[in-house]
Length: 429
Image (cartoon, rainbow, N blue to C red; front, side):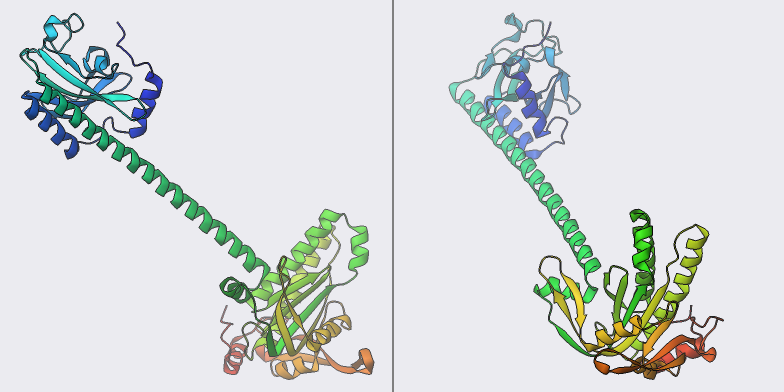
């Protein structure tokens, strides 16, 4: 025979499960209430029970062995109690047709007296009971039944506290999750900012919301340009063209980063980088020349690989100049780091009047690096406004400074001279 069920049984069970109290550990607050109920009512047994879909489970007990924890729902008198809204008093279970065959009556000694108060929440869900029992038929006084009602409200107060703690815990977890997501989003934004702007510029922008323009008395600018790019663009499928540019510029990025260069921008097939602006020192002309030599060697390798696979060859002209620049960030939506000044124009001129596959440097650069690098004078070449520039081809490291035949890998002598100048970026490799 099915056990009695409350009219709102589905919602009642949901409310009970939300408290996560069934099978929870003992708690002194509940234990003390059961002891007090037994003493006030003069009964040897008292307990707080919760009724789920299959069983009656005891959260606290007084006068019962510790191993008595649950019973089938259908056999529990408390199942009838939670179907009502008032105190259920059974003076003699054996004389009540509803319970005369209850397993409780069959115990030794048999339970004869039962009084239970349903634990009804403010939402109207009877989750369980506060009960007292005796092994002899009896009755309770008005004061005792009122005390049992008051104690049931204390149980409900404990349940409400538990519900709030669960809600608070959930809120804290949600807030922590939101904090972690916000931190992850902030980290992604900062990573994106650092990918768009040099790290010191990105940090300044993050700290103060703006970037102060800087005047640098000496910086070294590198321009690189792909020979015949316009014709290449006309003859190459778009996806392959982008892939070629990506391979080329990614290689330049990687080499430049190792030698302390900051990429300023790419303009179609042109590549611009600078050293000495964000970390000023005396090494930047040397660093840029080393980077340019490695770029030339790596692009030669890419060209050979491309020809082997049928791709169009990519050949670079590289120009380098050292001079004063102004640097800063422009724009407030798609911000860009940029540099300005006559030195930038001169570096571009070095590239524009260079030769494919070679590195063209200004007289200023040559003066800074001639003790370490092989330079081939080109003589004065006239630029705009009838201004002539002395130019030099940078062929490689001097033999006494190089540890390989193509003159782009420095040896220990070079490193000693480099460090004597004041640098420590390079080390044996």
